[in-house]
Length: 502
Image (cartoon, rainbow, N blue to C red; front, side):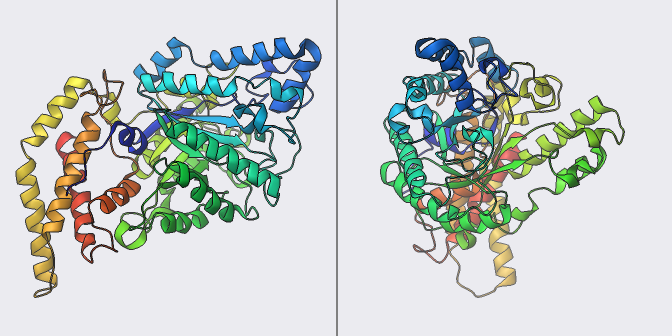
């Protein structure tokens, strides 16, 4: 029995994600939102809340925070994101405190600070719904976890410590937060494309992968379909084999995707390089994926989201010369090209700050300047999408026959007399073509919202192949010839995209 057509949820979850972070809304950062700090000495969310409680009391503080959340994205913002930026996703950082007072007991936010967040989760849910209605998916990022996944202020406090790791209370509370979010999504938060357990886990954090193991089990028990995005802990090479194992070709359940952050302005080695040198490095980025993705049947699935990046370079870099506006634009364009060619999506850091449009940190400014560019497929009109898909369909049979014959001839030539099951290749090709077309036409056909413009493309291809492989009965535990099906599926996707010109 052939798998059913991709659902609206499938398309939200597995298309290429072109988007931005919505930082400093539910997890404040002083350098972005100084207006929320009332002269607080520290830079974290908790510092801001305590300063406001001290100066204006609970009711006025709760009102101020509520207004900050609810005004995060105006109707004009939504229209710009959809119609100018061609954005189809937002990575939304939240904190454990965002879930409300019940999750704050025995933590740094216990007591009066917790009462500020009584309605915070309701604000998140309203924002997710508004985004969904505009065709924008939301990755819920538990940016601030109890104790902190790293020692930075964006973990919610100014403790300067990463006290999630090795602390059983914090690890358990973090797990309960994530299970609650997964349950809420399961119960009806359309448009949530994934859950991220923590942000920028400290390098070589104690027990990180064991915690991920327990989270995946706990989340899958209440929501077996939501993708889970894991921080690579600044060690992409170590994260890759982990997700390949979790995304084994015959394993059902939640897709596991790596969240990787690429900045070029913080390390001493980056600061020592010129803008031209840094730009020259970008086309080689994500090379660790080579040989890891593209063969789910044998190696499992590997996908990565560039969850944070920017157009910022350090002053020491700029001191080495060059035309800054021109090089900044080139830097953004080269990143856009590389991430679109090699990742499952991107979310720029960041969209909102007191000092809009944000300079080199601003998604709005860098999009308006042409530094950050959407994939071509997202710029097509609905009629362009329909015409391209219709024209491609007219070539379907000849393209399939050509692909099938080339496949058969190759194996007849290289392994004469050996047993194959080439029909699986043809079946895979047909499903790959159909899935690619379904994603591409989803907006134009009103399968998902946002139908005025854009055709979506499979971005999380490896994990989508794994999902379809299991559904089609082609996993290694089901047949020794699923590799033929996978090759056919990938060729069908590629042939469709070639035919529609994306």
